[in-house]
Amino acid sequence: MAIRVMLVDDQVLLRTGFRMVLAAQPDMEVVAEAGDGAEAIDVLRSTAVDVVLMDVRMPKLDGVEATRQICARPDAPKVLILTTFDLDEYAFSGLKAGASGFMLKDVPPAELLGAIRSVHSGDAVVAPSTTRRLLDRFSPMLPSTVADPQHKEIGRLTDREREVMLLVAQGLSNGEIAARLVLSEATVKTHVGRILTKLELRDRVQVVVMAYETGLVRAGGSGSR
Image (cartoon, rainbow, N blue to C red; front, side):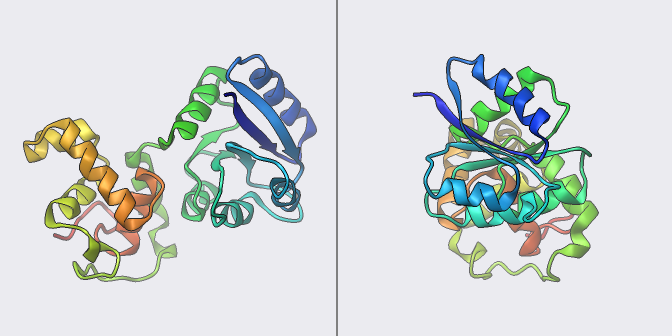
């Protein structure tokens, strides 16, 4: 079954360009378009979508707020934020709102297509290390918290899961975590899956965000054990 994609951007020419690229793919189909966030939310009420390509700077309702409202739905599609400037406040806010990643608008077509497929399969497009740089830069926007192993979210994890979460938040891959903890990569993958389930998170990017919000990791990369 083809990946059902929705294009949300107030620039018609940009949507046309993306549509042409996606239409050439046998596993993708553009099923809807919208010129702003409000229209996107309205369209989603009657159209089934798997992945939303979301601009951030739009009239009526910007992409960040639209992403927040869309990701709050029980049947929410995955959202991929498209931004003009790398590592800006829009990308940060988009991840906080629930997006599975962000990319630059001038990304090569092959990378865009790969990102759509990755997001659809449940992976996050943005590397955890990139998310850390975002959070380090914009950490003043986060609530002031003190790390607490009994935090209502973190307290659901076992000691090992909390240790794995800390390493994920520090930007390590499953292979690097496996080497650090002397575990198999498959075991680490299982731990990450349990962390996502217990904390009701959608991907590794959100793991990093929560680690900062709860104080498990602080700006600059220091962690609390």
